[in-house]
Length: 167
Image 1: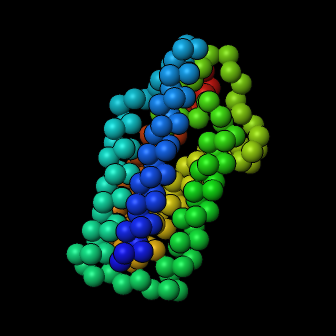
Image 2: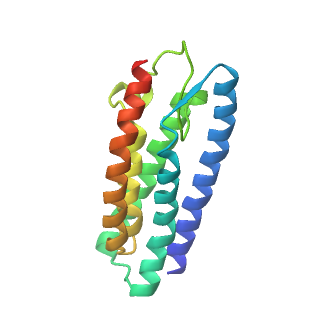
């Protein structure tokens, strides 16, 4: 359980780093006329991600979920790969990356890095992490609940983002 809490703590720190980058990029975008789209769904996304980071270790602790090596180690690899993909997206988008949907008029769509192959690669990372992080320590209820909530939220988010990017 201690190692799992360290992993959860590392993910929390990573998320805080994302928020620092996002806040800086939001200020940059707004200074250049950036417009936010779909802000009403954003608090729900934040709530779902906070719930994931609380519910996974809570389920492990309260329900005595074991670490099953045959499941845990591959899921840990997926978590690490998801982080790598997420930061590849952040690096590729540069100042255009944000946790919110913000479009700066006149900037072209990014078509390099993972965006050469996928329109929304960051959401691949979010989905993979949302399934894998709880399953590192067999928290399957959290994995199911987050995946269902995340699917509903991403269906809204992707529609909003596609409409915003279409102009």
